[in-house]
Length: 174
Image (cartoon, rainbow, N blue to C red; front, side, top):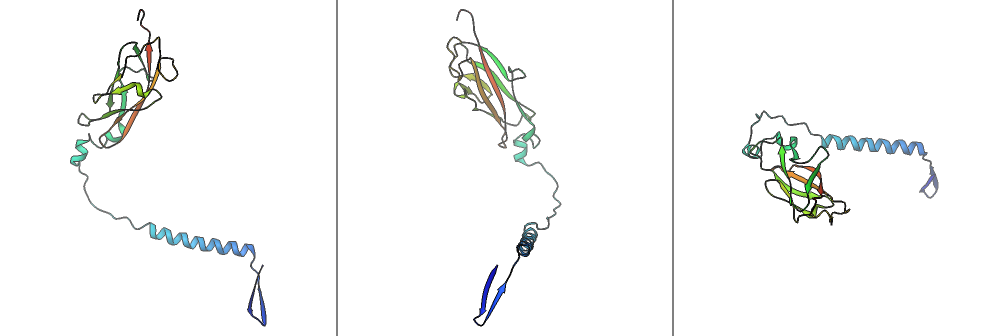
């Protein structure tokens, strides 16, 4: 209840029910939303511009390469496991499938609990920085399964990756 004294001689009592206030608020919000929507959605502009391949698109391997490529390892199985013998540094070579030959893919070690043990060159060759010894594992959980996430970066900036588990195998007598 709200009371208002308009004239000192005549007291006025104004009663506003909760239902009336709710309807009034809803009407004000609806009006505000309609006005905002009409300002935010201008009519689309139509242009008759034929599609062309720009020099930038050609240099990056074509527009279809941007999202349709995949990073694969030449030695990983279907689960991303690569087995390597202890005391060697070579792991695998990455490649980008689904891109044209003109696209230059950059390879990086992106993540993984054991990422600091690896390096990758511009051709996609992954190597241990230092050859692992099976008898003295250095990986995070010390089970000779080194976990790393590698990525290929398309010239447009699109990134695709592969999670690898590099399993170090014991070589008898070493």
